[in-house]
Image (tube, rainbow, N blue to C red):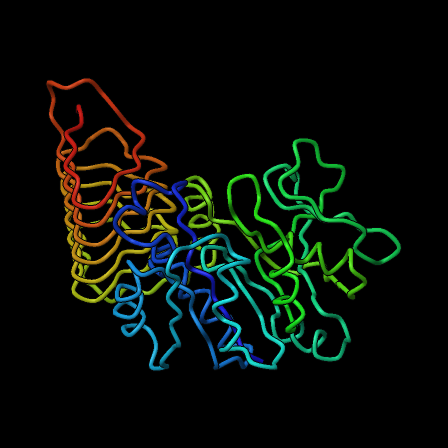
Length: 353
């Protein structure tokens, strides 16, 4: 079975971070969102993978993923993204006659995908969707289920009468391409995959479902990314490969090679990348700090710091923040106090102290 990873959406919800890097390449727990997705597919035995990208970021994806995987992936360039369903047509030649999996590259999954795939292979359905019960269904595409079958599907209803969210993973056969060619675009000009699945349902095709017994989170906002970072860090195992000098380490902490913690306190769970220097600082729980970062005389927790950042003299806590690659944050006493941040790459921000 082949896998198609959808990374073609032009989404602004994670701006300004996603101005500079595709949102799928934002790190959580110091591992890229897309790397978690690819590892899930490879672990299930799926080695033939295509990644749908736009013309602006293909080279970024190729360069970054070469650092993480020995496998070569097939890249499909979307000339003009028009919604996931329309974009999926460009993968028709890749999947040929096979059944296949489509997964959103900006969602986090942790479950038994191999079992899900086996179930789909053994069934005669044209499509199988993966559902998860949620407390706020209005944020999601929703499935209405009765008598062990899908009755209807709705795209982010204003008032949902079901708590079953449609996650961003679909098992499909070639019938989906017929459906995509039949549907009309939404009011925003987008061809959505849920509308194609609904077309199958309304035209007599078998659409199955499975309840997700595992973890899933749609990473559509900075808060989603921060919360997923917390969840992942809760399961880290301590691994100190760098140097700790005159410092206090408590809880489970990962410290990468070439990194130094000097005269500081670090409370886990936390992860620090390679060749990073932390001195005269406090690093609180749920912090993910990348490679080649310098933190001096500063205080932060529950935040994601990307590679190459400098955080200097920020005594009041940086909390629940995402700091983009290469950013410089310097504390200045004469400025009005500020705390919560979402900062794009190569930014420079002065904070009161």
